Image (cartoon, rainbow, N blue to C red; front, side, top):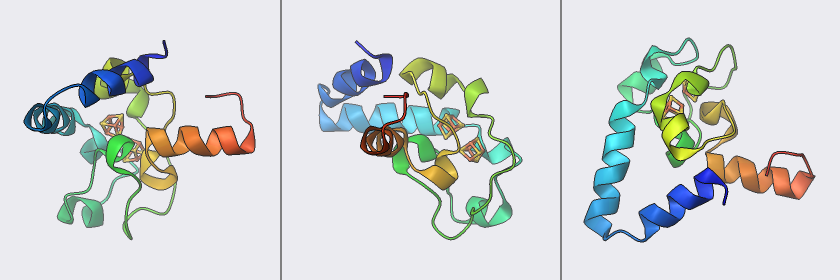
Length: 105
Ligand code: SF4
Ligand code: SF4
């Protein structure tokens, strides 16, 4: 099975408080705050961890560099996409790619 789908199934099988613990762990591992694409607006609004929570609201509307491919969360959860701050979560990008017929599932 695809590693991201496998990870989601594992998380969904947990009790709600355990799911929250896993999400908090991954949020703490997120390296968005040191990415060139992140900014003070996003920091002040405690925005990061876009791969699971979705794109930035109001703060990030440009794409310079994405360092998600060096993040342990991406490795541990099997993410295939990037620029989650501008393009939406992994789940959202996968859904859009199925609609528009690209090769990444
Ligand atoms: S993959 Fe990107 S958005 Fe997700 S936790 Fe890592 S740095 Fe943050
Ligand atoms: S999602 Fe990627 S581009 Fe956006 S802030 Fe995080 S690491 Fe940078």
